[in-house]
Image 1 (tube, rainbow, N blue to C red):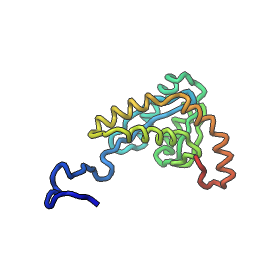
Image 2 (tube, rainbow, N blue to C red):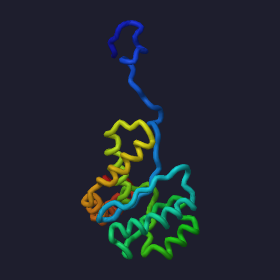
Image 3 (cartoon, rainbow, N blue to C red):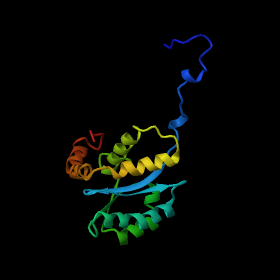
Image 4 (cartoon, rainbow, N blue to C red):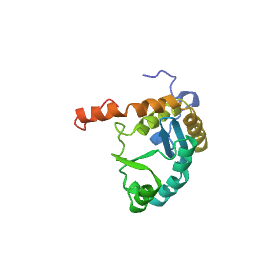
Length: 174
């Protein structure tokens, strides 16, 4: 129920600005390890197998070097079709020490899904009015994600796996 004087519903003081469909969006690629988050890469347009392969070539090794985890890192990758294309699988086979494939969008088995949720919660606290501002906030909040958040997610993997088995691949509290 709203109380106002007659015929004043379209006055600026009585309007709440809104944006349909949640405003803009920004697709990103990022990675994490038990020591913290790696690089964040902004994706413009639709990501295809070639763009994904370029991101892997440029950002994955760079992130592993940044976190000092070369050459013993593992690439957790969901089963998105563009990630499983032959050229991407071949590159990963020869460039990554170990590739672990997991179901798409599975917070149960992929700790970075939890990082995306964490980042989303932090970003929603701001009133963002442009894509440039969104990118700036994403980058600044990404860099603020503490290593212990990542470490706890990685350490939780054995418990996650046990719970997935116990729940017979159904939903878990992760």
